[in-house]
Length: 364
Image 1 (cartoon, one colour):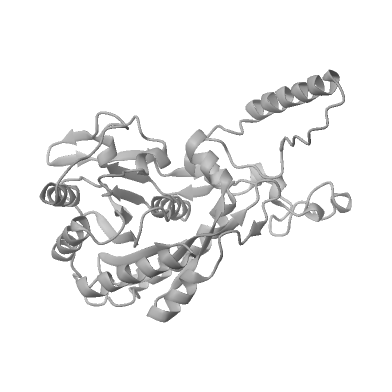
Image 2 (image 1 turned 45 degrees about the horizontal axis):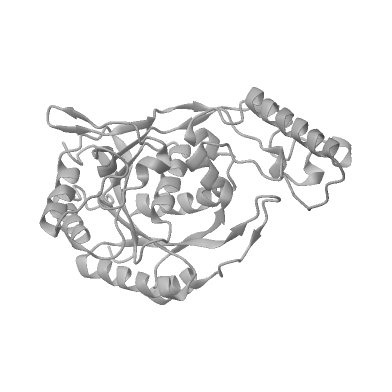
């Protein structure tokens, strides 16, 4: 019951709102799933639950079972085909470059993408207060004691299936929910064997490069130390911007503030995550990320109506080709493989798995 079936619990914290903590939580969950781990997301951001929207499960309903609630299954454990997005490869690695001599890219052993080994992904589950509200616009106007009771109920009354990781998406700051969460988790989780890692693995702290966000995150790190929760590392979100035309990254919002802070507090820096508009299109509209294709540029130079008609025909053909090619068909985790951030989070997830499964959270 409750957390009995969960092997590792990871808290996702932020010192202030608007740093993309829920987005980081979602992408960590997808990346862990792609790494073959079974994952659950517990959304305790009670007044601003966004996990259902990010996962595309807003219309799902939580079911009651004897003994508690059943989390919503986002996808089951299954085999997925690998994704090869030619638009993200260098010109010399495509059939158009060097007469196709370097295609397929190194490491594919000349195999057609469809013939490559399938990828085993772990199951993904989620639960959120947003799935219990009458509608998405319903406001949660609760005082501290009711929030505390709701957090404890989420931790004790959800019937999770066997999970490798449970990611807990928290509200920003250090409020009543955080104190209740820390107290309940420290009471319920235990280390049955001193040689094994604790069930409460630690916290991942999310910040942005701006000085005001970094300053607030310092308070979050101090909170973790005071309540006895280890810090697995810091993720710097919005660390640059990925161009939708070419897929290249530029430091539009600055970079490096989170890494400097991590060194100052002697915690791990897990990596920086740039802003990618294709990720937004994926979670908002379900569109598979595509880079450098079908970019419509209006330069203000229109010679005649025939050119406009030709452009419209070309756009219609593009839409028909995309539909016939199944560009927007598939699970969220499948389409996420085409996103540039998937590669970024592979590195972050690899570090996280190593830290969690070796029990090396700082301060734990």
